[in-house]
Amino acid sequence: MKKPLDGIKILELGNFVAAPFAGKIFAEFGAEVIKVEDPKSGDSLRNWRIMHGDTSLWWYVHARNKKSITLNLREQDGQEAVRELVKEADVLIENFRPGTLEKWEIGYEDLKAINPSIIMTRISGYGQTGPYRNKVGFGSIAESMGGIRYLTGFPDRPPVRVGLAVGDSVAGLYAVIGTLMALRARDTDPLKKGQYVDVALNEAVFSLLEGVLPEYDMKGIVRERTGATLEGIAPSNTYMCADGKYIVIAANSDSIFKRFMNAIGRSDLAESHEFSNNQGRAQQAEYLDQIIEEWTKRHHQKEVQKILDEAGVPVGPIYSIEDIVNDEQFQARDMLEKVTLPDGENVLIPGIVPKLSQTPGSTEWIGPKLGQHNEEILGEKLTVKK
Image (cartoon, rainbow, N blue to C red; front, top):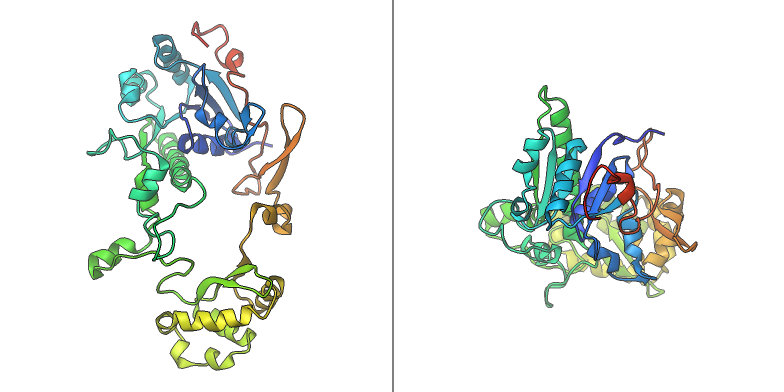
């Protein structure tokens, strides 16, 4: 079955998380993604977190459907190989520090002179311009300076991180969106001119901050950490059940709140003018949370889920990865995909997102060995050190 990005050729010069995350999505939906790695070390993520033999389990997900070639970009023959490969490429995606590729004479202006249609998607800590452009930038720093860590955690404790590389992943998503828009613009341009896409990690995180900026600018309000609650929106919190498990309930629209209160036997609150809109409820959020948790503590988690599902109230348990694996919805949506590792063992990897009805993405192969596709891609036409 034809995939939506069939025929698109992408050179990935990325390392770590952000650019390779974007490359993974392109590869899942049919683009030929040629991943350029250092001949000695490869992508650093090959050795991150939990290992299986000499390869990270994360790697098999992160690099699926990609082709791996090895080039030393610090040497002239590696740089020349990129110039040769870019002649037939649609996109080059990279996440080096700004100025690095220019130093190696494979920056955007260099490559545009070779292929005017090339789209270069550039991910960096702070973007290609501005006073911070030369600073080293990682996702953790972007999450800090982009504002999300200030808001994560409880008000009486230091800020905490989310347990995943959120900053890198959001930047990777913006890289995909920006690249697809640039491809669309190029393909509707009679001259087929390319452009570069500039994604900054800190800006990607900052873009998630909802109304935080206008609230500060107009009202002088600095939004603070609120733990499991949503300040100014009620009721929405995490509640303990009778079996010691936790459940999240988000009954913060007027009609849902009414259904929720009726479901837990508090029709008096459902009909109360005082709680008929969010502003009234938000002013007494702690009072409502106390009433709600008094009810949830009288029921096991599954019973709470059943009662509120039947009442049409948004509710869900807090899942560990074990819970996800055993969940029928994840199973039914093919989100737990079994693949075979090089040593013959089977392992689950996340399924493809999003789901397209006519041209879906798929896993064709898991993350390749270092330099696995040297001969196929480089072959005899390039005299380079592989």
